[in-house]
Amino acid sequence: MLSAEHDLRVLDLNVTLAPDEGESRPTPAERLERECHAAGVVRAAVAPPPGDPTTYLRANNAVARLAVARPLLAVARLAGPRDPDESAAARVRNLAASRAAHHPGPDDVRSVAYDDRFHAVRLAPARDGLPDATTVDALAETGLPAFVRAGPGFSPEAAAEAFADRGVPTVLESMGGYPLDRPSMERAVGLLDDHENLWLGTARVPYRGVVERAVQEHPDRVAFGSGAPDPHPSVAVTAARTLDVPENLLRRVVTDNPARVVPALASDD
Image (cartoon, rainbow, N blue to C red; front, side):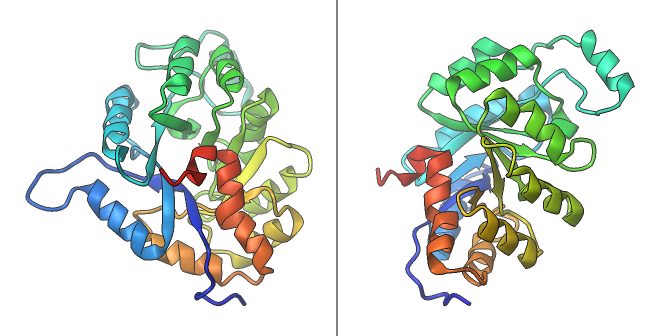
């Protein structure tokens, strides 16, 4: 096992940042910055928490504001009009699906990509819907990575097809299994053989054997994410440090691969 004392520059792809809740105590951004520093996380990509998809524009802007002058990079949440269910009935419904006012279209995605406040997008299609094909294609054109939650209602295979196969650099949060869906995580590891735009994120994965298998088989396709603030980032960092893998592979997971997905994480500014 690797010692917790090893000097690692930890970059975090999966952190949630809630808006400020008042001035009587430290803001969530201040607490998060302090907790990440204590855990050894140098920089983190942060997105708003799940909520009403109609309010994501406001939440995204709030997170971008809170990230300024902190070692945090803003990630924009997106929603969509399509039903991600893989059934025939859902496919028929999607033929007539159209974007509502709060659903981003191609121009909105391009605006997010070329706004230097945002460095990635996060999607939970089973909860918030799936963007339409033209919007996903626009996302692919920008090169902006997508952090995607798979799980019940949206399998890792569906995520790979909807995003990675259309040219979007895609990170499956929780290694494609949520909540604690080990079979889906195992299948997601296998998907790396056939999908070059696909990565697996380590947040909230309690099965050390699954993570070690993924790192050993695909050391360039597994990227650290803590899932902070719940769990605390120090918990995730400790779990990563104790993986039974060579130190050079661990360094790829916690430093090199997150920076490949979001290059700005490597900046010291």
